[in-house]
Image (cartoon, rainbow, N blue to C red; front, side, top):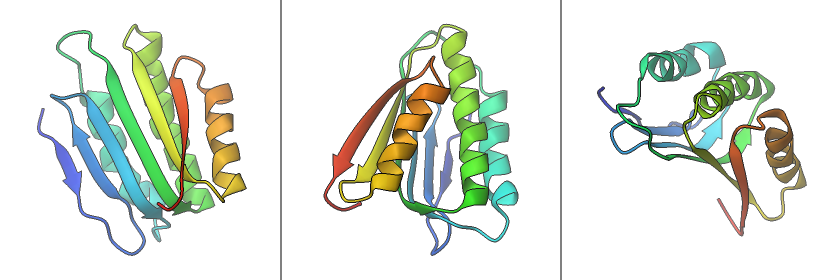
Length: 128
C-alpha cells in the first residue's frame, strides 16, 4: 500500500502513514474548517490496509492544539487502531503532550481508558 504523506498547514497536522514500516504519525495543529474532509482519507487508508504479517505498530501523535471536530475524528482514527489491536496486532499509541498542558495530558489518559486494546504511552515534552 502506498504511504500517506501530507504536509502540515496552519490548521492541519503533518501526516505520515508508512504502511510498510507500520509507523503512523500526526504532528502539529488540527483545526481544519472541515475536519471530516481532512481525516476521511486517513480513515479510509487505514480501513483498507491489511498488514502482511503480525508486526508491532507505532502510532505517534504530537498535536499542540486540536478542536472539538478534530477530536471526534481522532477518536474514529484511534478506534481503527484499537480494532487492529483487538485482532491481535500490537499497537503502541505514543501521545506526546506539552508538559504544561493539563488538558492534553488528561486527553491522553482518557485515550488509555477508552481504547483498552492499545498500549498508550504518555510522553511529556517541554515544547511541541
